[in-house]
Image (tube, rainbow, N blue to C red; front, side):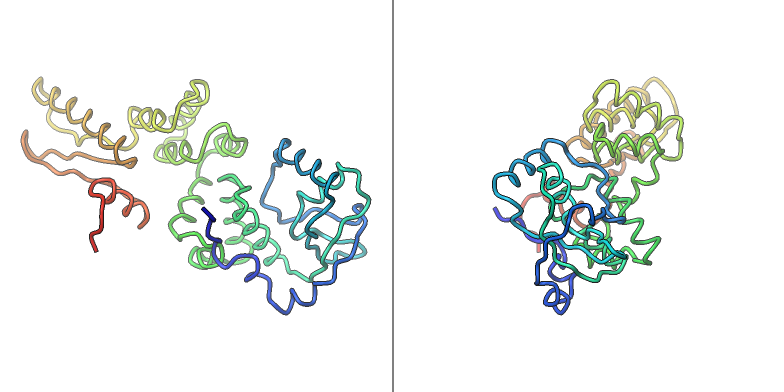
Length: 290
């Protein structure tokens, strides 16, 4: 199935008049090209880069890269992987379209390109979002409109920046996934406990679900409300805790059970955005409701 384009897309981010001015393609020496200083991607997969090198050796550069003037040389706006692969393939020049692009637009273009190609991991994306907010004054709503992600998705990704530096690096290097990071966020107010759980997750190669269970045991989400302690209530709480874990595994979200008596109480199901709410509703009661 063809994937829908994200947001406004690259063609919408580059003004049509600018595209028309940049249709002429010229060959530029590789040593006159410099990486995008706003490139959000910080790592290049050696295997996929090697495949691109072989493709360039056999087929050449099939699509020119986009560059902007930088003194006597040029900075790459889009196409840094092709430039790197062309160097490894032994090319001396590469076809380029030259375009005047300001810093804000340059970061935005690079971010959208990588998101559309799914080349960024969650930390690279979170840092790029933060850079757009800090350096260029984007609001989360503006990012949503420009990037094509829901506002809540952008906010939730940026929350990963609250994690300790070592955990962020672990996410960046692919040791743990975004799901692990989201689970660890529930311990963000207790850095020592968070780092302890993170170390266990790494050493034990725990799954996201196992991580969520460990977080709950460590004082995170999904607990039964405290009640007076007694042999009967302890047995009931143990049973309710098992129910909490069962519901959280089934719904893939935080659940709380709040007993009012031994036979009555309230179940609270948490969600972080409209998309998650829709998913939970469809999990509980599939079908149309509107």
